[in-house]
Amino acid sequence: MKLGKLHIGTSGWNYAHWRGIFYPDDLPQNRWLDFYSQHFDTVEINFSFYRLPEKKTFEGWYHTTQEHFSFTAKVSRFYTHMKKLALPEENLSRFLENATGLGDKLSAILFQLPPFWNVNVERLAQLAAYMNAQKILPGIRSVLEVRNNSWLSEDVFKVLKDNNIALCLADWPELPVDSPITADFVYVRRHGPSALYASRYTQKELEADAGMIRRWLTSGKDVYVYFNNDAMAWAVKNALELKKLLKQG
Image (tube, rainbow, N blue to C red; front, side):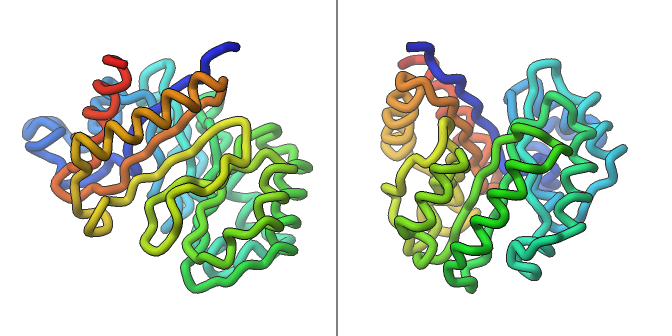
């Protein structure tokens, strides 16, 4: 069986507090992404969750990064949190259209649901049908991150599996860590082991992740891992540590 491909990076790259820790002090901000792409092969775009980038902005990111770099784009919170996946939704189609600016470097679309929204299988099924039918980004991989336990149901898992949508494996508080694999790829987000966004994973915790990742890769699944514990640049440090562990193993 062919081994899956591994992609390790961070959730975002444009953090001023990374200057002097990851980015050299004298490196201009407009060169941060290029510098980042020399150390990692993927990044998750968090900016798009708060504000829809213009297509030309996506195009700029495409041209700034290394040849084999990839992006995951997080869908606007207007659609996931305010509209709650309601269709038809021009905001989503506009997001997808703008994201075409990333060309063949766009690897997946992330839908992050709010913790206050209880499960709605009908809305999820409608979204899955839309993503399968849309012609803007045909075949693009989709990921669903839930932050409410009610979404961890067999009905939800069935919709995800039937449509090859990955359930994000995230260490969000009060959610189980053994959620099922629902797609032909695996998507992992690490938000911080103790304090959200502001704590560092230990060597032991990273070794446990590395063991799971090896099994997924051996089974032929591509694996995406993004660290979101950006405080003190822990995300960069943990991502580099995990890369080293997997090269060793």
